[in-house]
Image (cartoon, rainbow, N blue to C red; front, side):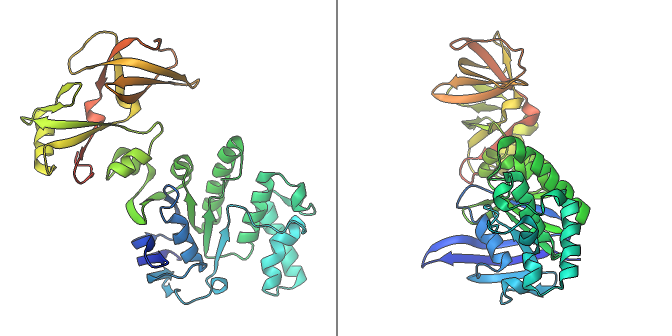
Length: 361
């Protein structure tokens, strides 16, 4: 049983640049956890501290039950695949995979045996004699994964592993990595800024923002029950729409462009948890309905642009000077400049406290 535990982990660069801020996080044994967030949020620094490539300013890192803050990277029994793969171009695929075994002074027979086993598992046996320059991006990535796994580490670390692959290969490879992780049962921590990668590969996702953990949960938890404005806006594609509103008389959400009647219990919950009457209405593009005529609780909007995607269409609407995105079936017909009415699936909307930016409903 080997998990990873981070306690009050902090990393400060220079005198005042806080990359990771008091991070508490536990990765379970055999779990596939993804650190997700925009550039500069601290996710890669966190991964590098786990690997031993960066020393924490404060806090603790446990691998299993062992405190490893002062353990060198080569003795932590972790393996890391870098975004650039970091392979030796002058070596064959076989020698790249075998390199860590040679560094640990394994015998030639054992090296051949373990490289062969890993190559078979990764379906690259036929590539072992080729140089790295003769491999495609996807093949080189599998060689990098093989080099990381050949020593049978306790923890597998992936830093943006799909970033250098084309779109089609990324989709194929993320499925491959997820199945591989489950087949070998290794605790895995992956860093990415791509929410599609995170949502499809992870058992749980840790969303980071400005060095802090914003929310930890399953992909469905993050999508259906975001904790705050950042997570609500970061998870989901297209992103969630937000409209500033005021709660009136506990029964209406009023913006500059509409007055939305809400259920009584809905209003009571907002009044109970909101710090002020100023709130933010959050609604996903899939939870907005369009109508040709005015209907109860609808808002009049103008079609700004149409984005056909084949299996669905995104309609950009102008609500005052704000763009609201709506996802509709590809058969939906409209044109730019047309006036339509929109309503919301009230059971799917989110209400956020404007002051604290926390989701309250």
